[in-house]
Image (cartoon, rainbow, N blue to C red; front, side):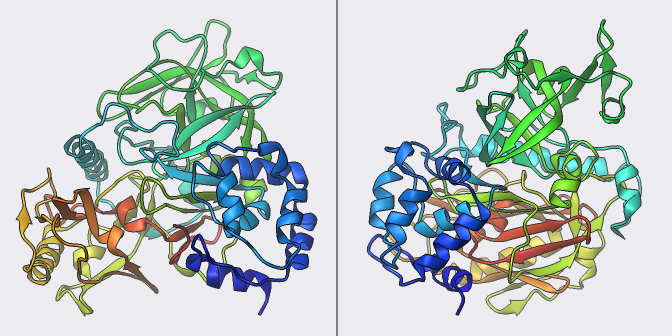
Length: 502
């Protein structure tokens, strides 16, 4: 069996005392062929929030660790003392210059871990507001789902969001020359990438220093009559004829400033002349992150701007909890992925749609027509937390879930999550399996994809009902956790692979 397949099979089996025999020379050969020592060191820096001996953690150090034909976990865990990462994460990371570590916004590994202890009620309220806005936007005209085609990218980009202070995921990117590191959330429902920047007229608090374009030798202004400027939702001209932008979110948060170009560093790759917002005036509940990376389908997203580099392919794996690690990767194909067609909605051209046809619980499909899901259409969204279903589907799912869970004491509802349990006195809990059945693909949810845990005394079914059966189904990030999800825009398909991250 080849090395990569061996590593993929054993990846989920590692613990602090596990050893696995591999061909160390082959590992070294692959790393040397694909990556320089510096690039590998950059990836390792992304894996560890704080490295005890960063200068020693390079390709030579990996040679030393691997040359006895084993992958010992403990020495690496000592070095990566502030975040959990297995040797397999390191080996895979060193083989890809286009992959970034993804952590939860509230995780201990995140420098942006929330200090104000925002309540679950507030987070779910913001989440519901995002979904409500999606529904209002989609309802402005008849929304017919069509197979994705070239005409999609001629549409006006639509950036939807309701600030960033929900259950989002953090990546580290670099801007400018020399490179300065920043913490961004990423959003499949946004095209525009932006960050707070100097001079700052009105800025919210963030932990990192503000981006200063005057300190970057690769920074440049964009003329207000340029191709990229006129593609903004709201643009204007400065007194010197440079491009200005304005982006407003549903909760009245906003960002505006200069629309500029500079180098963007993604893992070890430098993306030159990347166009993004340099926000001089920003206000809202942005959770102290430095900005947002737009992964939408419009012309201004990083996916479209780097089409020649990465062929409009990206993938991510969202970790299962605050102290776990996932990844975001540009341009790399993923093996053993099952694909479903990517669909489009003319009223929401920047978003990703697919065909949900059924849901099963406890091994049995809900007794519903597929038109319950295909009628309104289904969106896959990294920025929404909870999956929102048509009421007919939700109540059918909820009623069966309640029957399976009747041995456990109930707990009060949590905002729009109406099926909750008090599991304080239980060491082991059994929940029914739930499977999302898409066209040609099934997604088996694990425990963390089925429930939303506010506390041991309030564990809720992680689904909510739309107000009407005609409203779009939204698959939230809770149900996406631990799956590698591949977006291939050129081939108009979305792929799923289970057990992709911790």
